[in-house]
Length: 265
Picture 1 (cartoon, rainbow, N blue to C red):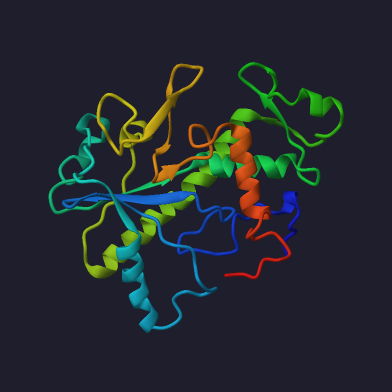
Picture 2: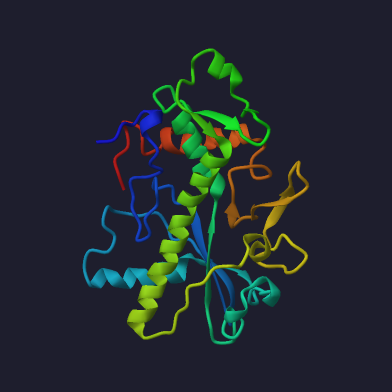
C-alpha cells in the first residue's frame, strides 16, 4: 500500500497504460506525421480497471484511435536534413512512411518530484545551484530546519528528472517498433533530432508549430501547442503558483484519485 500523503503520493493516477511511466504521470502525447498530415493521439481516460479483457474488446483499440486522433496540420512535418544524422536521410519522412514523435511535458513531472521532496514527510533535499555556488532559493527553509535531507546539486536533480521523463517516450517507440515487426512492416528507431527543431522553435523549420517563451538566458523554451499540448506554466496559467495549485487539485481535489471519496474508474 502507498501513502496518500503528499510525500508518498508521487503516483499521478492509479490507471496504467501499455507504456509505463516512472510515477504514472501520463505526461507524454504521441504525435505522428504521414501523407495525410500531422496528428496527435491522446486517448481518453480508462472506463474500467482492465479496458481490453477479451478478443472482442480489441476492436476498441481501433475505435479509440479513430475517435482520439486530432489533426494538427494538413501537411507533413518539415524535417531539416542538416539537423539529422546522415544515415537517416534516405528513408526518414519520405512519401508512404509514418514518423512517430512522442512529446513530453517535462514540467508536470518536475512539479510532481518537487512536491514529494519538499513535503513535510518527504526527503527534504537541500537543492543547491551548483552553477552559482549557492542555495537554489531554499536558504530560509534550510536555516529553519524544514529541509534536513542531503545536499543535492540542482543540475543532478534536474538531469535525473529528465532521464525519468525520457523513459516513457523511448518505451512508447519500442512498443510501436515491436508491433510493426509483428505486422511485417519495416521500422527504424532513431534519435539525434533536437527537440527545438522538431517542435519548431528555431528558424530552420516550422516543425510541430509549438509556442515558445524566451528565458532570462535569451534562449527559446517550448511551452506548448495551443489547445493540444499545454504545459503547466504560463501562458496557459497566470503563474507557476496557479499551475502547481492546479496539479495538486488534480490529485486531491474533487474527483482526485488521492481522496477518500475516490471510487476508481
